[in-house]
Each structure stands twice: as C-alpha cells, then as structure tokens.
Length: 552
Image (cartoon, rainbow, N blue to C red):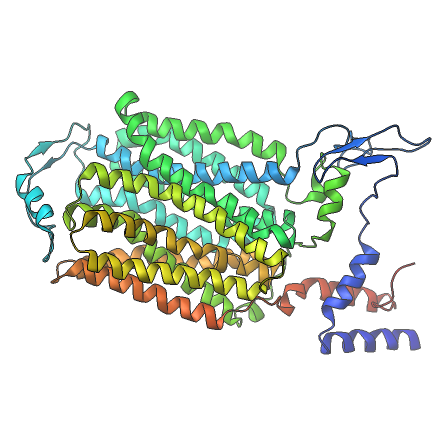
C-alpha cells in the first residue's frame, strides 16, 4: 500500500508541477523499442547511403516489419538507398500539384465550354481607370464564343463556386479525420476519387449545368482533408530541424498545380478540346494514386522498406496522433484563433492576386490581356519557389540557433507584411505605369507567401500530436474567399474603387500580421500530451506501479 500511495503522490506531483514532458521523455526511453544499432561491419557512406559488408556469424541482419508474418525483409541499407523522406516529399509535392490542377483547370475550360456573346461596354470600368483601359474598352468589338452550352453568368458562377463551398466544410474536419483513419488513406482515397469525378465532369456538363456544379461540389468535399492530412504525415516523418523545409516543399506543389491549371489548360483546349482538361486531370490523379499507396506510410515505424540508417535518424521524432482531443483546452488557446485570422487574411489577399487581379490589370491599368495572362501564369511558379526558400531559411536559422523558433515565425510573417505593405502602396502610386505595376504585383503575390512559413508551421510548434486537427480548424479562415469578393464588388464602383480595394486588403493583412507577431506562441502546449499522460498514469496506478519508475 505504501508503494501505491507513493506512486499516486508522485504522479499527482508531476502533473501539478509541469513535469509532464520530463516524465514522458523518461517513459519513451524505457517503453519504446530502441532503433537497431549499426553493427561494426556496417560501412556508412553518407547520411543516405549505407553498404552492409559481410555479416557477423549468427547475425540475423535485416529488418522485420509488422504485418509480414515475421519474415525477414531485405535491409534497405544493402546497397544504394533513396531515403523514404525524399520519396514522401516527391509524392506529397505531386499530390498537392494534382489537387490544385483539378481545382483551377475548370477556370480555363469553362471559357471554351460556354457559347456567349459579349458586347463592349464600360460597366466594368471603374472611376479613375487608366486611359489605356478606357480606350481598350471602347475599341472592343462584339465577339461570339464557340462553346457548346448556353449557360448564364449565374450558372457559371455556381459551377465555379461550389467546389469551394465543399472545400471549406471538409477542411475544418479533415485534419481530425486524417488523424483518426490515417493520412495515407485519407489523401490516397480523396485524390483518387477526385480523379474519377474529373473524368465524369464532361458527362455531367452534357446532362445539366447543375449536374456539373454537383460534381464540383463533391470534388471540393473530397479535397478539403488533403492538405491537413499531408501536414499530419510530414509531422511524423520530419525531424524538428527539417520540418519547415519538408512542409513547404510539399505545399509548393500547390503553386505548380495552379500554374499548370491556369497555363497548360489553355494549350490543351486549343489542341485537344476542353473535355481533355478534365480527362487529363483525372488520368494524372489516377496514375499518381497507386504510387502513393505503395510507397507512403503514416509513420516510419509502419514502413516495411525503411533502412536502419533512416530509422535511427527519425528516432528523435515522437509524434503520435491521438484519438481523444482535449477540446476544452484547445479552444481556450489564443493561438488557435490567431491562426484562423491568419488564414482569413491570407485567403483575402490570394482572392485579389488570383481571382480579381486579371480584371484589375486589364480594366483598370489597361494591361494587354496576353501580358496579364503571362503574369497570372508565372506568379504561382514564383510563389512555389518562395515556399521552398522560406522553408529552407526557417530551418537553417533554427539549426544554427541564430533565432528562436518564435523569432523565426515572427521574422517570416513580418517580412511578408512589409512586402505586402510596400507593394500595395507602390501599386497605388504607380498608377498607369504598367512596368511598375507588373513588378510590384509580383512582389505582392510572392510577399504574402512568407506567411505559410510562419503560421502554417505553428500547429507543429504548439501541438505536434494534434497538428492536423489544428490545421483543419484554421481552415475556417477560408471564409475569406467568400467575403472578399462581396466586399470588393461594393467597393470597385466607388471613385478610385480599385485603390480602396488594395488598401483594404493591405490593412487587413497588416493588422492580422500584428496580432500574429505579438500574440502567437511557439511553445509546446501541455495539452499536446493529454491522452498519453492520462493513459500512462491511469494504467500504472491501477496496476500498483510507480509511473515514474523505469521498466527493468
């Protein structure tokens, strides 16, 4: 009885005095299986290549993976080896690219699908438009579209918008779904089914415009969990000093997919017809899916092909999604609401730079449509490059201990705020100077990309075990994609309406940036260990064992 009493008192003292992390670290050292050590006859060529020489007598070299019936698997260290982290990165990058290709390619295809007549008028030319824009509007001749369908503008708007209605709904819960059923299954199934739906889109379009809208709604519902699920997988595969790099390389695929959807889709329409925009996206998605299921696992411990060397490298990662969420503590965390606001502000800026920018550039500045299309195609590629650079720089500063983790997040968000502020003010003062507007617009579009290397890394900072859930919750900020067009539509007809739109966008981003910089934290929250502490303490106390006493 004295032992049990001491165990209970020790457990209660540890939880009261904030020693949870120390306790769990001690438990992990004694309860988790240690990664196999390299033998003296293992010649390590580099961090990623290991050559196994003649094994010792009686040495059962090789790996044994769960689910293999105890059969020996060939050790990935025997000969040349590609690290599985790299394989995961490539497939995650391609998966994000496929997702955004399926998302945005319809924006180009629908132009060729619809048979419309457009007359030149000045209804979309705002007060204060540049002379080049006014002249271009006056000289525009009536044109007749060659599409097959006589859809109204309202029907086209519904078709284009339903995807995002579904996306917002499932992104909020997608992170939790991925943590419960597994990110690998979530990403593979959703993108695979998205490919099937893309193949069905031409058939739906022939039936009725609302049928196509319904197909796009289903695709949005399917894609919502993709990014949180990818995020959760990387949290279990990335060492602390390489998290930002791995996350942002994966998410850079979004920019490449956008560039393909907006740029290459036009070439597909010209050479093969609009149906092949949907067929091509669906085929690419279905081609990618089996490679994802074959080569990706939720964690290193589950992968049958992992090498001894890589297993040792990843032994420092102790991220394990939990089935129970401490909702009351999570929802009292101030940082969660700052992340939602950051997502809202970023989405608002992206709505302007992606959806409304072509109208601004042609109808306000008077830029040639070809130049505008080139800018809109190149910008996502530059954004993808900025993703990768910002992730690498974040990890570099962390590895070299130049800045604290919180300092890095503040620096990245702050640099993005300064670029957005400077370029927004510059665009207003540039007026009708198309060269300056072009350069400043690129700066604006790339500037807010500094945001992901800050706020999108915060869930891994504060609660890596619930990182996918938190990222999904931050998806509430995607409502900015619905609010921004409504607000901007009311502002544009005003005198110098586009200037007001740009300033509202800039002020919102700067204000939210201040809230993030001064209000966020990068410290791991105590509720990150909620389930693990409760399970360990309850089991040990019930069995009459001291939970702080290591196993022999």
